[in-house]
Amino acid sequence: SDKIGQVRIATGTLITASGDISLTFKQVDGVNDVTLESVKVSSSAGTGIGVLAEVINKNSNRTGVKAYASVITTSDVAVQSGSLSNLTLNGIHLGNIADIKKNDSDGRLVVAINAVTSETGVEAYTDQKGRLNLRSIDGRGIEIKTDSVSNGPSALT
Image 1 (cartoon, rainbow, N blue to C red):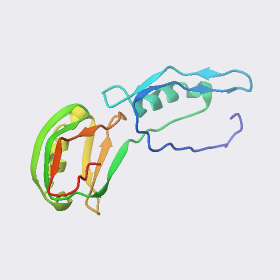
Image 2 (image 1 turned 135 degrees about the vertical axis):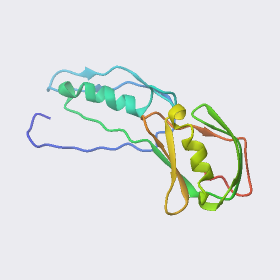
Image 3 (image 1 turned 180 degrees about the horizontal axis):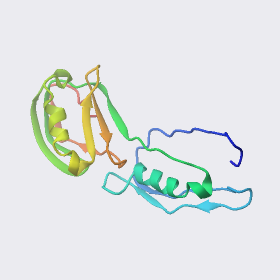
């Protein structure tokens, strides 16, 4: 907008698929459209909502729009005791994680995930309810896979 002091905040949630995103801001000056470069959204480095925010901000002088990206996922339930087989996070194989305690009380799961943060772009922590939280440190998507979960429901879904 061209009015002093006018602010609008919008949020998007539940982005669950990878792909290319193209944005066009219509009639930004009352007449002209501004089309931004296409951005790939995935769990690979150099892609994701964080890169989309960078592209939006790079063009904010033309559109008047600024963006901030926060990519976080939280498990539906508290971490259950048990084991994970062939855990993979953003394409990086973490392997088997055995003897996970309820609520990850000894931090075994969080430590395993955080040991590869520099490769996955994801850091982990548990909240007060014992749920696993994964946060993208660079705005890329989060993709987590495991072959099997034993001794209780998966806290990774």
